[in-house]
Length: 169
Image 1 (cartoon, helix red, strand yellow):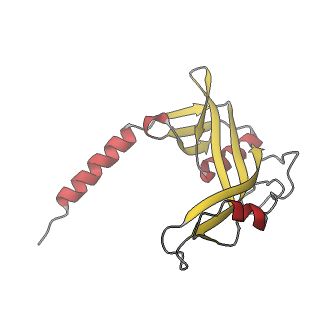
Image 2 (cartoon, rainbow, N blue to C red; image 1 turned 30 degrees about the horizontal axis):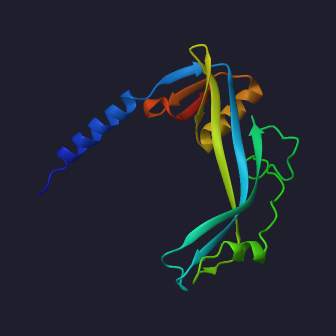
């Protein structure tokens, strides 16, 4: 019979190191941003089944900066089901522009519209403003806190390179 004790010990050590490496702080000065982006993308492949050797090309894109959940001036659509606002769609690539990027023996696929969001949280730490990448949950918590004027308790990731968690106080 195999024991799970060594596995549990290893997991416990890893969790302890991970938690010990996380910084916790509280701030009253912060701003949550979400950069929404539409990008037209085309995949090219020499394999008709598109199972290998696929290459992607990005064409036109548009972006819009959401700040603290407010309606940006240039917003065309929104808020969506995540409370985000979006810019106008970029122009769809023409067949001529798609063919110009085509390599010998490749076939282009139908253009796909890709939606992406880049979340960031700026906050004051030791008298200086810091901006770190984060996730949707932290963004939404910061937006809610900003609306009621609450401070945020933040948990930073390893090396203080990301914001992993936020709770309003």
